[in-house]
Image 1 (tube, helix red, strand yellow):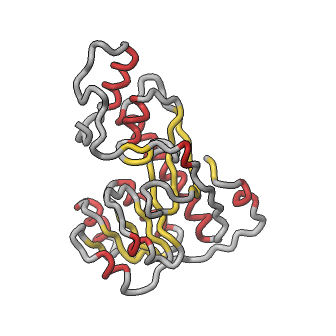
Image 2 (image 1 turned 90 degrees about the vertical axis):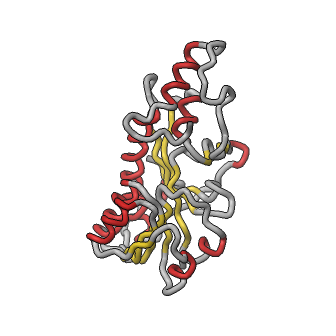
Length: 241
């Protein structure tokens, strides 16, 4: 686990302050992070999600929930709040939304930024035969996945890793690091580090491998193996191709 600075680990006294927030996103990770927020006694004002499972959880937990077609700016402008958490959120939020929190908007990304910004980061990491991957919590900016880093958590990529298994590793790393993030935010002791734009790699949603989604027998065996594992999502839907 790495924060942007070791200073936040060495606070002799960490005064805990309660904050208010909204979450936008749709996955089991969204629910787990919402549970962490509530367990620490913070005020979760609402969840905006396209996921019926997330919205059902919110209703059972007496949390206001809104669908993807809601007036997002109208909802967020009703009363001041401190943080907006974007967790497994596929929407690019406009600047007026990012400006709504009194503090800032925080995004979860499933790579060690600035590398593998964009979409399907775990699959691209396997295709590129990375040995270390990880997750990042960062401040949201007008440029996708480019804001200041708050905390990161690396994970090892095994030789037989698939998109499914690496996604699971990132899932648990996200939960572990979010717990630390909430602690830092509640005592105002988070420290930020700027991303090195020279190290940035970005993969758009419509980007495809050089051979599309066909196996090229002209590639070496290691590349073919990585390509197949990168498209193996187990029992889950393959969102790439």
